[in-house]
Image 1 (cartoon, rainbow, N blue to C red):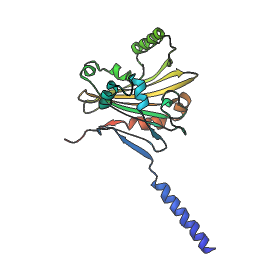
Image 2: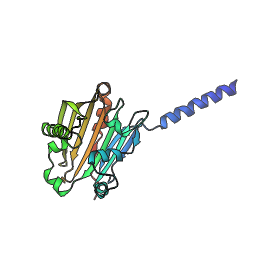
Image 3: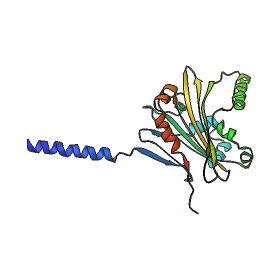
Image 4: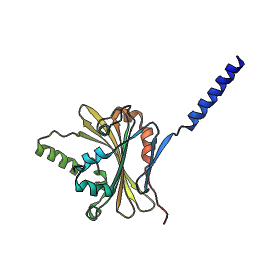
Length: 225
């Protein structure tokens, strides 16, 4: 009996040590090591290439796609039991997409705070109007409907980098999806780093503090040299 109790106590200690050893967060850096953030370890990292195909509109096997790969880094994390890239557009569980774009000379000349707001989805009135006009011209019903602004904050960093953090709702199908979008232009004006956190509106309301922790971890790093 004493031996049994001893083994039970030892097993309890082992389990406690194993639990303590589990990381709380996944720490992420982009390809060049200049953009940093963290997500809870309960998220699963997934391939973001299908999202890049959706956003860019270019064929994955095209020369344009290969050139884009040289300028664009991205990753995605899904907390769903069955992770999938399209949960960015309709997710009952939190989804995080992050991307870093090295801007072309033409893009450098046109980047603005409104451009940062519209970097992934149409947020400003001008881009929402253009999006709906294009949908009407193609005869396809718009995926994103009934835009609702929630908040819009300006980000000013000590090193001269600047950006925006905007939160908004879109109706997608029969559900309302909340998006928390942070976009930062680096101090040289040559790189845009973006994080998009999303889940259905009721999920976002219940878990807003968690999403704030993820969003505020999204930072630019100054490399030595």
